[in-house]
Image (cartoon, rainbow, N blue to C red; front, side, top):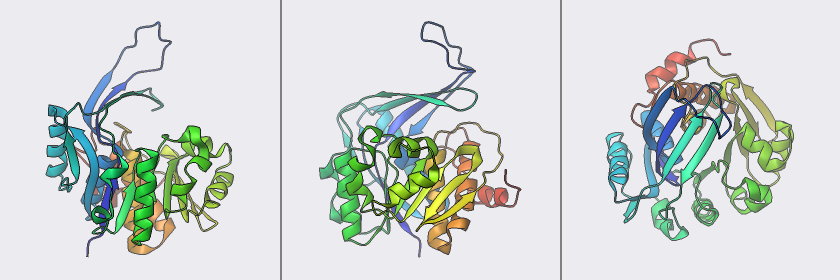
Length: 303
């Protein structure tokens, strides 16, 4: 039986701009590549999850504008269940991501009144699923989803991104106490924990009740903390086209393989390959990595 996933979070449209280096604001910036596409963590995660053979749906909001309709159509084409994506009058959010040659990112967000509210999440929506993945959204919505997931004995994963860094771990402690998996990149982990050592970061996070902490490190692979056990796995060398969405592809890969094998080391390797394949694509939603691509990469040497 296929695992059923439900991603909860905000959808948007993304414009990625690529520059040689970041210049001071008073200088004109030359853009050598521009990529547009569907954005938002729930979209990346759900599309890749479907590619891996899982069933995936999304709880989110989009506008009734042409962008909102484009997002719905693109997700439907990738077999994502969008029956719980609410269309409301207004403009769909817009992200502009600017990357330099090292793929360091500056992010600009066009605010919208279409963000999820706690009222959009209820037990009836969560009940049919096996996995609840809470993506960046409001703290109140994240907490409600985590509690409902825990009450209904679902597998609950949390990928807050940088949303709550100013609050620190204490500010999201209620969510952490109700999730099984936490996914961060290494920059986010250090900022949330106010520590440089990833081991110390994970120990601090685990103190709030989260069992498995997965920290992505880009081309360097990942760092996994499972019930006090430390697991590291190297990345895969690929030609990078666009890093947007790679983190959510990693999450989908990790959860897929961990639920199949119950082996965090195998899950880490599979997730690294999934994320690397996503980086090699210009647009993850419109042209996602395939299971065949991932398995082919797994046969190659790691970094």
